[in-house]
Length: 348
Image (tube, rainbow, N blue to C red):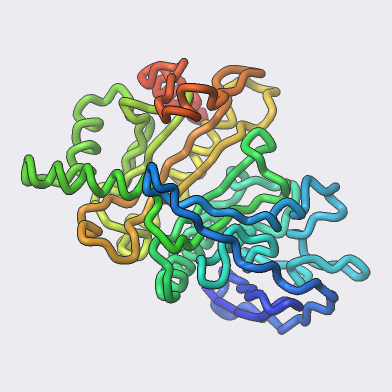
């Protein structure tokens, strides 16, 4: 992998990740005239829950579902400059022009998986998926070292049903100035489990799922993918490494080598869930990593969460009263049935 860093016209950082170590990546200047970068969003504390909420009003002006010929994530062309000045790229990462977090409140980055506007992550070759994994890992290391960053979150939103505003295949990375509520809760549970049993919670969960077997969707020598017993979403999968590690940086070479093919297989299964001719399945794909520094950091277990809001053809799972107001999810699809459908969705 070759990494080349440069700057966009307004000073934001742009990094190219090329698969070949000897790739020739000539510096291409961003000749656009851009407005000043927006002020940082504000992090406010909810006194009743003790959770952070980000207020970022400038995001109201972000680009929203432009036509393909105006996509800001495609390579630049003569007379049509974009966020990527180069004429082509493998993987590109840059600071978000409309960030929820910036400056002292953190950082937001965009990860472009390919320069092909009409592709999807599921359509990538394993080698390209491996390069994306390498970019996620590198950005986790770089962002974790920034002052004030408490947690790094790599994720992909796909589909307008999820709220995606750009169709080009891409994901994002948030560097939070606080530990997110979900992660904090998992760490609390892991600490309590250790105190009660002397064992690690994540290891016990994965072991129990493997023994039960009903919700296991796919396995390799180094990863296990299963539908959680208490899945919140109609179709939800967690992917855990067999050797528990706190974050992407700690994965060994064998786990890194096996992951891309498993990841692509799961994404393709999601696209087969609702039958031939169905529109692409909307999903969220999220890496859960340990915070940069935390008393119970070593108890955390890195895992990937993949879920869709589509519960049946033409039907979505909406977060209504119980979910939105009380954070109590009601799932219409039994996890065992979801796992069975995902197993059957494997390629022939």
